Length: 408
Image 1 (cartoon, rainbow, N blue to C red):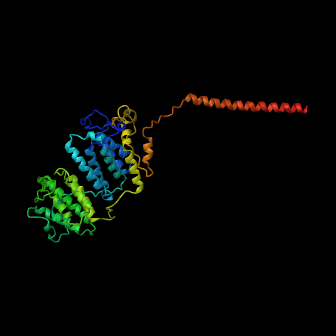
Image 2: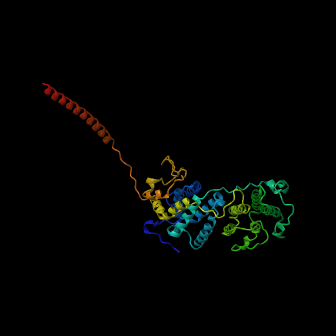
Image 3: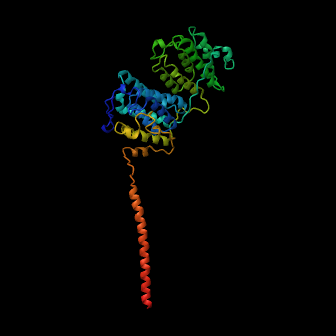
């Protein structure tokens, strides 16, 4: 459903999506804006994060924006706020429908639904606590010789994994899959999460180096997945994960993994598997599956969301007639200004979005100081002082004359 925007907040621009292939709505370099968005979300600067999200939305980068926000969530927030997962799934499904039905998504910048939902996610990501996802280890050539991995191996037999694998599955993947299963089963081990990540990285590297991302296993049917992708080894990993009691978050991660699954996108989706391991193993500190923002941050978020259209109105001030006065159009042009347009300010806890909204639409003009007036004011002060001195002298002489007359 198309949601109308009030006229004063409507973006009326004749440019088409091709005009924004490299530069954004206000002439910034596309990659720089995505970098700034990530930096400000991680640092907790809601004002700046919202501004750059608006710039990207109005430039027609809605699909890329959602993917970027999701990558930020998985890599930099993940287990610290799992409640965001459900929000992403709901919004992403709606976005995919739009993407299938329209050539470009530029018109959605004037859709109130997407304005609200984009900034709802931006707000949650910015105000949520942060936690960096574990970095995947690099697999060396010697790691493919199992004798070199004796210190990591805990499998004494293959009884557990034999319940999952079939005769059509490649033999070389059996031991790594068995190790993943047993480390999840014995999650009390000090390195259970580390081992799961190592063997998952081993399988992905093995698939990439020797099979060009098309390592073929036994057919495992997946809902809404093309049949040619149902031979992939990662479905065995998900089958292992689902052998354990699962929270709703695991199912949501699986649904996200299945969305638009292809061999080329498989590596980018690996972090979803890593997060599923973290939830199952539940390392210290314990994951709060029902985490919600504190009331103070919720108030900040609500104030921010109520004023979304004013944020777009403020954004429009940077176009054409205003852009040359506020920010140089080419951000890489060093001769324009020594100052970067990108703020290096650290987010302050006493930040108030209400104060920001009060500043919108106010034109603050600098006071013009006239040097000649300053000089005149100083001379007037000096003259006044001299006049006062003369007056006092005259009054003293008058008093003396009166006294002399009386005495006479």
